[in-house]
Length: 177
Ligand SMILES: Nc1ncnc2c1ncn2[C@@H]1O[C@H](COP(=O)(O)OP(=O)(O)O)[C@@H](O)[C@H]1O
Ligand SMILES: O=C(O)C1=C[C@@H](OP(=O)(O)O)[C@@H](O)[C@H](O)C1
Ligand SMILES: [Mg+2]
Image (tube, rainbow, N blue to C red; front, side, top):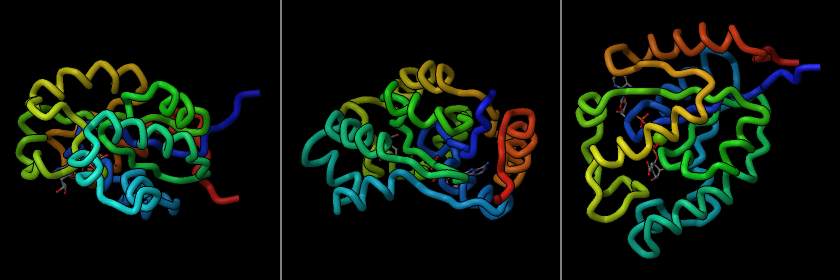
């Protein structure tokens, strides 16, 4: 028997809309919302940028993997951080009960939305440009995505509508039981 998925997992670059779209999706579908960046900060009792500043981006990715592997939420919209896709173990764990939705915005749209590239706690090499990070990650997001939504040119509300339309084609149970 095919196990229906109960979560929607949002992945994508910083600025792709995971956190903001995630909240609207949860309200629209009557589901719960969790942002894994907040789970990390609660577990660590410090900000993501503090982790990067003090211990570097690799340690942030390791902490993120640990936290993602503890996620056992049901019927949640899960907004991940942009670096979640570096962990194969974490992505496969989230996929067990989640449809993975890649919010794919192009570089120009992302740059227009992100104004705090150096202070947002991004898990990147210190000298790494946003363009380079985008190129490095694209293959990872594509690898894990069940659904890809092109979100550069459309409003947050239209992204929400598109996600809902696309997940309906999957084995997904959003209804409350
Ligand atoms: N479809 C969209 N159109 C325009 N702006 C958007 C869209 N999606 C998100 N944004 C804006 O981009 C910024 C970053 O969004 P955010 O949800 O924090 O991204 P993420 O969690 O993926 O890093 C926010 O200011 C948000 O309002
Ligand atoms: O892309 C990244 O390396 C990161 C993005 C952040 O989340 P958003 O994608 O929500 O900005 C956060 O997880 C962390 O600071 C690392
Ligand atoms: Mg976010």
